[in-house]
Amino acid sequence: MKGKAILAALLMSAAGTAAFAQTEFTPDTTETVEYSTDRYKVETNSFWNNWFISVGAGGNVYFGDHDKQAKFGKRISPALDVAVGKWFSPGIGVRLMYSGLSAKGATGRIESGGLVHATGTPVPGWEHAAGGELQYQKFKFFNFQADALFNLTNLFGGYKEKRIYNISAYGGLGVMRSTQEPKKADVSAHFGLLNTFRLCSALDLNLDLRGAMFNDDFDGEFGGRGEGMFTATLGLTYKFKPRGWDRSKTVTYTIYNNDEINAMRAELDRISKENAMLEQALAESNTRAAEKVAKHIVSPSLITFQIGKSKLSNEARANLGMLAEVIKQGDGSTVYTITGYADAGTGSARINERLSKARAEAVRDCLVEEFGVDESQLKVEYKGGVDNMFYDDPRLSRAVITRGN
Image (cartoon, rainbow, N blue to C red; front, side):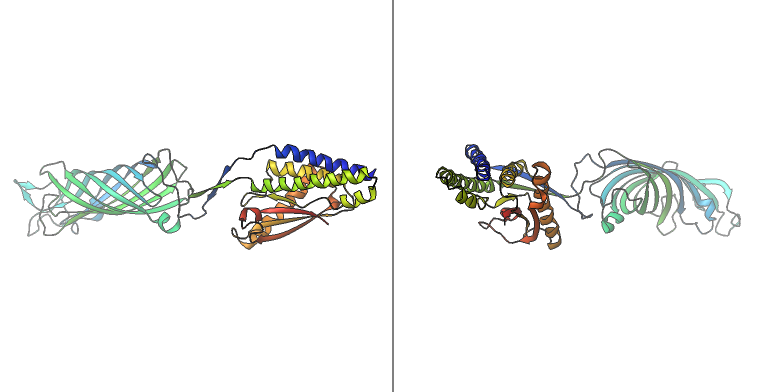
């Protein structure tokens, strides 16, 4: 009876072989996506990504011909910033900005019968100076500037989406104009530091500190040296969608033609021939000889995996189902060794060790949990990364081989 049971199992395997032989396996392609952990590598975005608008208010200090004579506090005037810009990468961007309102200082220059931009209030201690009276001055102006932005935090520390603080250096040129007589237009040069504090994905708090340089006569008074302005503003920046950068990724396309399945089909063809031998032996009432052959009829099973994966494909599960039937109908004392392998050409030794173990355990778990094989008949081994085992093909080394002892 035992011999008949073994024969029935093998005949089922042969029937599976016949059905398997009628299936055509066409070439296929799989896609593997690996994301870089390097914070200095990000995906390039389109032109409409990472635009922003900012508004800020604060104060500026004018450095003119008489800045030493007027107290510092008397030279502070209100400032307003409005800017729009874009980041081309986490480290490089541009912006176009309006800034201005008013400037304060001191004047001692007579222009058309009066002091330039004078307020009428004398500078204390300079009412009756030998060179002439000094008065406080105040005038309105605006400045349109274009700046190149360099995010130093991202350039030197790598891009991090949720980083709280970023500092950016910038520099650029602008056109500056006073709007009160005597009116004056001039080219200005700017440099500064933009400090941003993340409030949420769309909103930053920004502190802008910058200096500007321009010609000596911008305030209408010639003193023989260049003039400048220091500005500090506090404001908010809104970042339009789409915002941020995706991690850099590598997409690998693997083309395969089911060579491993065709190899299994050849093995099953061989089994069907051996089944015919068993049937002939039983017909001749040589049951003992048939049992002896049956104990050695289970051939090694090869299950392959995708690179870096330990998940069984549907084809692999189908093959394991057929192997499980043979094991359950065979000699219950036979122990089958499940050996896991990984491709030594990819991954580190440590990763391959873990991966080969996970693959062997996946085959064991499938045989036990899905197809009801007695776990006592299964032994798990793993060899880590190995060189090409079959036909100089690394894919056939990303495998699990099951052999009966």
